[in-house]
Figure 1: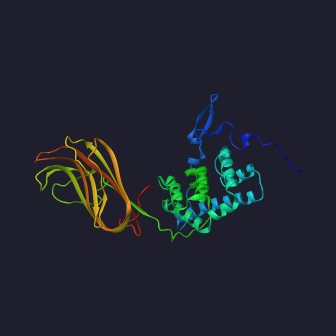
Figure 2: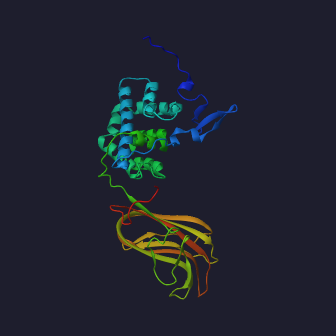
Figure 3: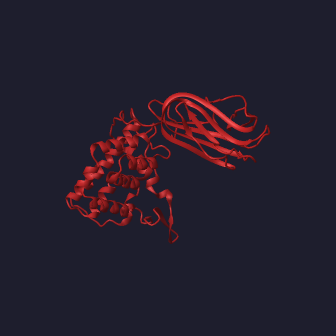
Length: 359
């Protein structure tokens, strides 16, 4: 049987009315005689395959993504050693993306290939050792939900963790590949992969968010007149005269639990500004170990988040104070602050049950 050859037209590789604009990092479509941004056509943002059904979807997804990118980089290293052209290297970089119009990103792939040629294969190999690949797998795993998808905000966190935990040439290459793939590409590589992983040594942070619109979360007021729970709204500051004889609009809560905590985020909404705002530490929190959150005076109407990062092994949050106003004497200073959420992250076993952040 004779072999029939023909010259491929661009539209047979990707639509000729679709392009990547490197200046704006956007995918564009040709509409009515001009190029316009079309984010819906960007394969980097599109998850098109259903998640795998395995005994450990998150770990197997992380292993599959790691294996795909490792195979991609191994192929590039071999091509560099064989003095292949930059276009050959770029084609290897794009080869793992068998879904979507990734061919439009040829300029990105050429840039990554040129950078890797500049690093040299000895430096690349030294930077991406087996322990580094294990770290990369764990970074992916710790940012995936139970279905093997990246959590909300997980893609950005993966790239930040790669910088923090890997660094150097290895981080530069891995993050270049991740940036090319996008969140959609990572999810798709996870879904179509066939690898089986072991993530027992990964030591991921657990994460739990108390959504006070849904319930009081098991938190309790620290005393009479120190806040009230409003179902469907959240914990609300309350007017009271404290032991010093002065008037406060304040919320003070407690929650007992045992864990090693690494961060706490407190989200509040000031719905009514006080004429006498609380002067300092309007949000203040302590554990049995010490202070974890301090802040300035109560701001105006708006939504705010304050946070703490560190490392404490605690028996609970002994004191979480949210203050709207303060005035000398027994008058009501006014003001309302509503506690909307508290998110706690830690190591070991999640004392509150299953993770519920960014599912």
